[in-house]
Length: 181
Length: 410
Figure (cartoon, helix red, strand yellow):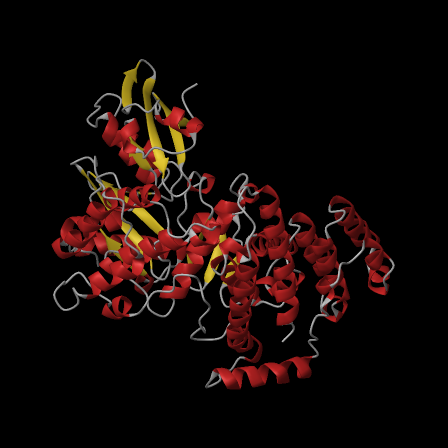
């Protein structure tokens, strides 16, 4: 159990789910509820970590309106947006949208929104890319949603620009680029 | 015990001398005896480390524990005699010419493709007696023909071919680990390329040692297992398909895993060396003394690994800029580690220590992991967020010095 006590039924759901998916016994799992910056107020995130993995192996479960979305499910993000009817009811801002994406589709990347979020490097080419970092954006367009944001992986100094398109049927396509095209 | 310490030391010394010579040729500094003294000191240290590692290696071979180092070493001699593991001849001591290899009886016993590989390596490294010496050491080792299948021999030779400078002993030792024996043909091949790469890094860069060398030894002795999971296995471990695009490796229990699906994994040797050192550091510090994920102990564990991985690429201590990045990634509002950030937010005692680290960083002072550990240890009994006090009272392993495993590999 994590720092803050988690409701028994939530804990049990996650344990049962991991048992069902991967035959992981409850004693191999620790569950906590972190509070990442920019996480939507109407959503909660639970992190189920495999004991003995030094923090490397974990599963994110996001709870919105009584429904769980797990990071191991391939279409989780599309399903979340569809369930929330997001194109007709865009109730999360660009930061929140990006933060959800960065916990369900890809993990351990920091959302960055200005060049001051990343320390200067001796690599000038890298600094030139850092200078291009902008705040995340989210647009509702005729045929869906367009989102754009930057992420940073401190471990390998990897800076990525994400361009995400969700169509009217909530099918998602995205590109992970070194910088905007 | 198959490894001859003298042989390994000689090979390392040859590399170190080459490295020193290359440095002196490009350096504008005046010549001094310092490089030579450093070589001698590092070589002595390396010999001590390798000797200290014997018990761990034997634990795997014999499946039993000994009470003391002396007992282990005595058993090492017995083991070598009993299982016919010969000491490798000290071929690296004198320059080896290509013809010494191609005219040898060992060479005649190689398959046509292996002969071609050896010829290619010799041609590509013409004049490099270290590479030739290691090739000769490998094929002359009785183990090479006695214990390895033809495929195993090809994989070991390929490991040397891909990473000139790698030590034959490392590649041969790796074939005797439980990890290697459990691998598919493809994994064996990949594993030897990785071992070759790590081995060459340690052998060619004295400033990366002892950390880089210890990291290789962890894997080649089987003290820490090497894992090369399939894509399905990675996905089952919770990694998303997109995670795999930026994941180098990770550790779980007593195994260090590499993500061979990462595009260009083998192209960045510093990142691979850092990753191996970092993850193996988790294993060595935690395998018998684990940390819960939302505790100050876990934060220390991560901090130590991020700090010490620099040693494996010759940076000691890490730069202020690097550690500022680590601090941001751990504790800032948009931290990469949700769990560590959460401890920081909720534990005021821990936060006070961590904030002091930031203050010190801002005035150019880096806090080393042992200082951090001792500060946290003072909170034992006062801070309810600490769940494993023993972790905080145990000095940390900062250079991946091998420690005996609690139970032998199966």
